[in-house]
Structures are given as C-alpha cells and as structure tokens.
Image 1 (cartoon, rainbow, N blue to C red):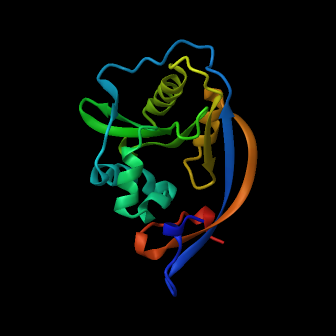
Image 2 (cartoon, rainbow, N blue to C red):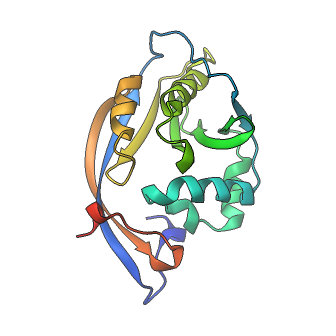
Image 3 (cartoon, one colour):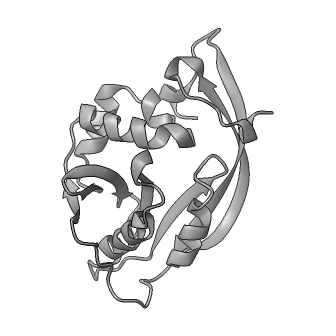
Length: 195
C-alpha cells in the first residue's frame, strides 16, 4: 500500500473487496485511426493540481476512484509534471467530457492509468472512440514500445472490461483486493461491493 493511502489511526472507513483485471495489448490494433465526431476535440494538456482533482473527482466518484484523492498536493504536482505522463482531455462543443492519462514511466510499456467520461457524457458513444484514440496515442510513436497495459475492476462501469477487450486488450490476470476507503473522502460505496 502506498504510504499516503494509509488510514489514520482510528479513522472510519468502508472495506470493499474488488476483483481487479489486468490487461495488455502487445501491438497496435489493425484498424483505421480513431476519428472523433464533429464538435469533439481531444487534446494533450498539462493540468494544475486543482484542474486534475476536479476531473478525477467528478469522473471517478461513481466508480470509487480514491487513490489520487489521498495523494498529497505536492506528490500529485510532481506526478503531473512528469515528462512520462500524458493527460488528454476530451471536450464536446467546448465542454469537458472526459479524460485519459497514460504513463510511459514503465517504458517500454505504457500504462493507461485512468480513463473516464463525465457522468452526463456516458452512453453517448464517446467512450469507444476515446479509448481507440488513447491506444492510437500510445502506438503512434513508432519507437520500441513493447505494449500497453491497463487494469479495471469490479467497481468500474460494467462496460469497462468489455470495452477494453473489444479495443484489443487481452486479460492477463485477475486478483482480489481489499480496499479501505476512508469516510472523509465522501465516496459512496456501490451496493454490489458492500460485504
């Protein structure tokens, strides 16, 4: 467990058990490059800590994204400043609709750290095109990339795993994890994860 993700002594929390699925893609899929619909823009951006937290918190709350909520601002600022990190923000007619974060710090592997849509943009067909664009952004370099990795879990949107598989990722392993989610984060644990 990361030091910053530990509970304070006596802190109230919910313990949840999740199944985590690890996936990888060893080469670029054989398909045309992703084409965004009219009015949709996807741009690599450098975000401030506040901007990042706003995206992460709103997109991740329904899916129990909690680790970065626990990360102190100074650590998050260093993370966001890393040249290995890329954050692409999706906008629809200028309005923020989602983002994905890739990390080449594991080179020659690139990990898709986070991927998600704002609640109001889920179910509008944007997830798959953004996922294809994320894959394209990783494999576009032509350098000695060995693969792209991602993981999802039973707390994520039910379409997350099928979408990763449909995009060309293959499952490599599954593990059960227990997470202690501090009450102070204000996250609601989904009913299907309550023991």
